[in-house]
Image 1 (tube, one colour):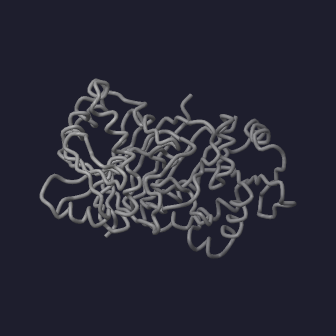
Image 2 (cartoon, rainbow over the protein chains, first blue to last red):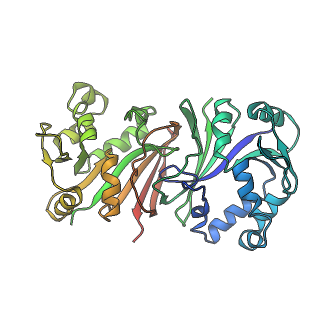
Image 3 (tube, rainbow over the protein chains, first blue to last red):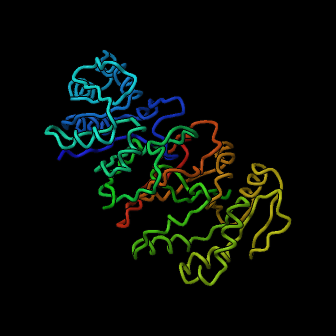
Length: 187
Length: 187
């Protein structure tokens, strides 16, 4: 069975986007050590799951020349990797190697996990996390804790109806102040 | 000048209390390593600043026999330390060694920081943090990141009007899954 992971940047007040959906604060403090970590991460083969909003945001950035100049490894990985977008309103998905899924989220993800292929990753897409975590379908969370307070924004766990206890499996603190935290849901 | 620090437990979704004000989830995973850290922390001499709600919560717990049995070092420190409660509605503060302050929060805290005495600490009391951080009066933050998603609650930075950038000064991961993060505001 394919593993489903979440990879998101969060602030110390728990937000993964500001209240307008902006995530650019997550790139404010980049240095060689951080770039090496991000590039290494991007080299792992994954397939990505997106909600519509994050899909459109990513599609408007990663195929551009600017993205290739800013973070070539990540841009190459995002453009070439298999991608799935969950949307009832989109009629087509034109970003390279993207499949539009219009069925029930939990059912579709159960099927995807049972298919052969690379592991699945959610990157952004707060609306996907609560229903999939609630259904026990998320196997791991990687959170990049940025040294920043936004004051307002959205948490990636919005809509969670029950407490979710996690096990911490690893941490790494970076010179730029980011702390990467690896968790798994407690079984 | 006295240093003003914040010490709070937070969840991975950024909350320091649940939506009913409950903080008991922060004590769910205690082991010998964690107890030793908490007891060592409590032995540092501090004076505490509280908003009314946290003051009343703490006053209803720390002087009790149950608190002494659960966490003797912390109970002794909380009961004997100098305490300041900011409230316009309280008419007296009856917990041992507590002074009621009814003036403007920022003005009162500036005066307190200029007086001689132990360093000042905020413990709970989310309503105090945004105005004092905004006025540049908070010198350090210690956050205990619990391996838990609450799904809803209050952030201790509610009401922050501007982004606050922090510098990470230290981290420590514990076997119980807590990660302690030490930050200072970026100067």
